[in-house]
Length: 226
Image (cartoon, rainbow, N blue to C red; front, top):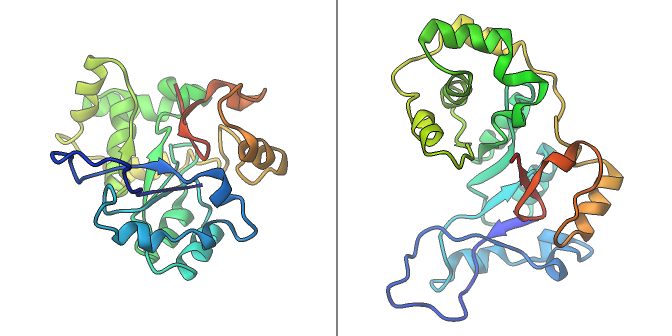
């Protein structure tokens, strides 16, 4: 369930030594002690590896503490579900205390809970001449949370970058904070049935229920909205 660096079988002379991600093979993650047995430090420090930072996805605070306490290399980022209806303030604090930045996937909650017509978010957007999506992105930025805002539309990609010319007030931040439900709008990563399904999935089909609307990002631990 970790995302980490890997040694390339063949390395092009002109290969970019920057960011690289792969899914640790099931045989390595499904041992008795799971990620504790995987030598992340060796991969991280190997000069032939791609990238120089380790990331994790969907790790709850207790798993973050366990991982950090049993490895020499601390992950740089924990990509988790964060949006106005599931704000993860406690997760942000615990990760931050250990030097890990949380990154938001599903920042718009796939439009669930009528996010794009929510009266609080639309009202704030109207006050600044901005869309609900831009308000959400600005809210995340002001919380110090990097965001993975997926879009196939060039117009929306451009709009997603137009969030640095305004600032939410303290009162507006408090109004958004009040929207928090404290629960996922996708699925519970700690639900035994879901953990079993995720642990045995290779490529779809998706299970019935809320997660049907989700799509795989390529690693079984990390999902994002369409």
